[in-house]
Length: 143
Image (tube, rainbow, N blue to C red):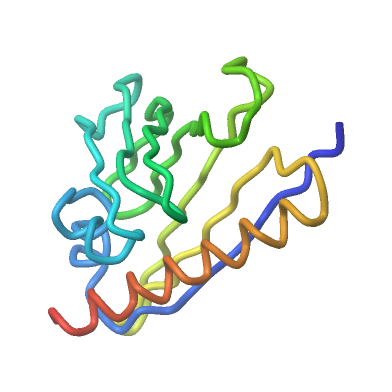
């Protein structure tokens, strides 16, 4: 299978602490990530679960927190049963979110691997760009 990496980024005019808080606080995440409810301890090795409704279908996605460097990096695995694929390691994405702060702004760079086609990569990039735009709006409105 072809592994294409979906990428998206945004620059947010806010302190890195506020951006980080928005990435790991379930009530804030719900406001910009398509209404999803997220549960996690935000520690490496702990599970992460997303629940909600997408395009009229209820979902419960899951994964594991792989790396947490507060205010710098968040990396986790992700599997969605809505993909129709078996729940096996090769069907999990790894999502990496890197934060780089400078001059009162934070660049948020996101990468998601395991997109098995150009269409899947484009769809992932579209969704992540929408999510990051929502993150930017949410954080800047609160700062």
